[in-house]
Length: 260
Length: 285
Picture 1: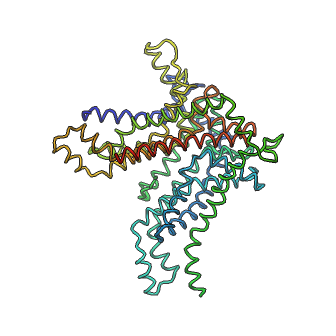
Picture 2 (picture 1 turned 30 degrees about the vertical axis):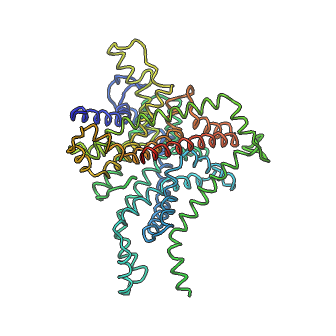
């Protein structure tokens, strides 16, 4: 393949990757009552409709709340596991890594089904949000683990031993050696866990309780019956929210988030 | 004594919450699906008392369900192959390209992953629908008289699935190519191999582990996808995952739904293992 042709080919693929997202953003400014092309003028009409739609606003609050709780739990458990992983060597180490990545490797729909049966079999059911939050923690755990363990790549156990020989207690060693090392990883992992949790669909869909839906579920339900550009306005706000989180973390905090 | 015990226990306390979480909420519930698939269908309850093989009997005696598994596998194969063909050159450029396009390209490949799957599938409904952007544009230019059937069929599902899973193909292949020493290709070229031969004999075989990882990932994700097939396929084309979720959520057929989910998973796993064997053999040869 000649070089210009190759570059054009890659550009076409990038356009393909961006196309549906740009189309959604574009459609949100459509002034018409339906998603018609070309748009009947530009307006913020559907953003107004969206902001006054209590169903969507409640869904956003539910999503943010679940993402926040998920991030805290996932952040603590995932960080602890990553510290264990980095400080250990041998057979157990590989097992820990595979187990921690398992929720990412298993099909989300199977995990959702298994959790649905489970919350009913232990008598909790979907009346509470416990099942949904457990599912979100499972899915986001690998991302915290990957980010925190990556931030400790340079960690040498000798540092801790040196500190210990100089009289530093366990807490001091953690605060002065481990914490500065893992801080960017923890923040990056938590931010990513938050974004992932905010977008999770299948688990939320199967474990939702009557009347409380997250934003992706509400959007999905809406799309099955409605074709107004309001859904595009909702989607655009969700995309912007994610973008803000990523830009703040990468530009302002100077973090490099490890996604895989 | 207690100090020694504390030293041993300390690190284990770090891993304990994750271990308990994964055992209680992942391992046990997965085993529970297997048990559920052998339970009796219930009357007014999700499942009844006693165990039976009837759920599997019901599945294998109905050509409708078998056809659906075959269709789902077919969609998975085509999606995986399309991702490989479309993604490999991009992965190569991201790994080896020298232009400033590389950093931008990496961002462009990753960014769709940050947008929820419902939104991305919704974008495709806007593009592919009978009144969608593509059909409207083509009709506006007078290239077609009526709308092309792009949605509510397997083609539409495959187009959207390729989009949703393409990054999962590009990223593993990219890191595999990054791991290949460029001087190997240079050596082959200096010995008179053409660009194509150098690629075919050096780069392609060495990037096989990345191809393998990407293909397995995309294939498994396509089989279990729910949102994209149900929004693009509508009620007309259903994949197995959609049928399973509907059986569980809408009609509360838990035992039968579990049996269907397991048949799909086991069939998918067989193909993954076969593919793994095949590529490893090729790799060694």
